Length: 127
Image 1 (spheres, rainbow, N blue to C red):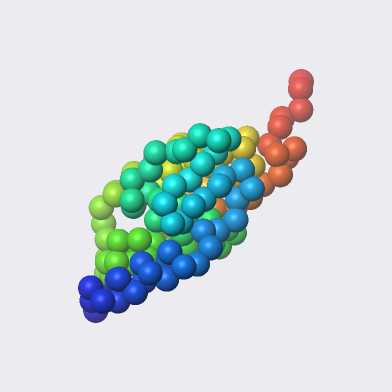
Image 2: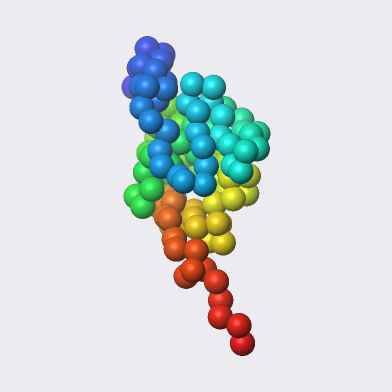
């Protein structure tokens, strides 16, 4: 069972650890902001936590249960589409698209994976 004390400890650890690696994005965990091309990107607290979780785990498959526990502090079966809505929002706001060198993809019936891709591989040859 997750207690309030364990949640506070987890949040404290979250603030102490680096915010992940993404050359095109600048993260400041202390002020809980993410900047792209000099512009601060508006994110809710949960969106920020989710973005940091993905950026810390680039290339790893994160299960829906793990994400729910890490970001929301909930365990057990979650059937709502809340996670999908947050992922959609951060994918668009942070520009986690192949054309920007990132690919945030869903893995059917499991979870999500953020991968860094080569920009040259994203450009389609002219016909």
